[in-house]
Length: 221
Image 1 (cartoon, rainbow, N blue to C red):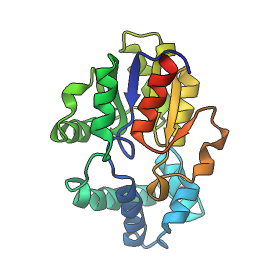
Image 2: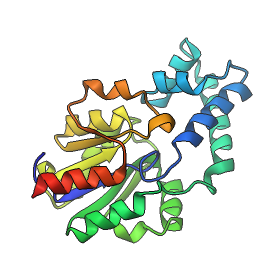
Image 3: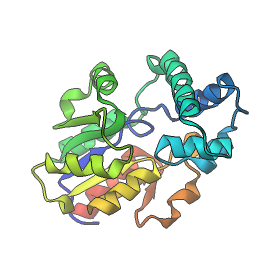
């Protein structure tokens, strides 16, 4: 791993411990829309980005635009019921502090809508720890790579000095496309992906956020 000066953190399922809620909200949405509800195992087996493709996989067919909108509506309603109760990853604060104390800087990049992301990050008390906080803005593509590219252009670093830490295959694909280092975080039974989904990516997989930071610090010495 190259010498890293800046970490870009993913939000959902990485710093924000909502992966199980995302799974349960999707199961609830399918049931509410009249589709057979997927199991957590099916969710993890088929998870991908963008979300409409993911829903097609779970449904076993290509859904209509109206069906996609209905699923999104029910998902947002279900997720919103639990959002205020979700906590940060239990090691998030320690990981952020450890990296900051080493002299590194950090930012936040999420596919969560910007207008919803900012209040959540402020409520968690970590907004000021980041040099940049970028959520998804309406009209932007539903893939992370273009979003990451825009984020990188806002940072005062060569992208070879930047590391992305995320929990989804889309994070890894974005890092590979944009030429940054990456560490894949897998949350075990609550992860969004089967572990095998990361096997085609050229990045290490870690089981905790502290492990991720320690790996970066060790490699940068």
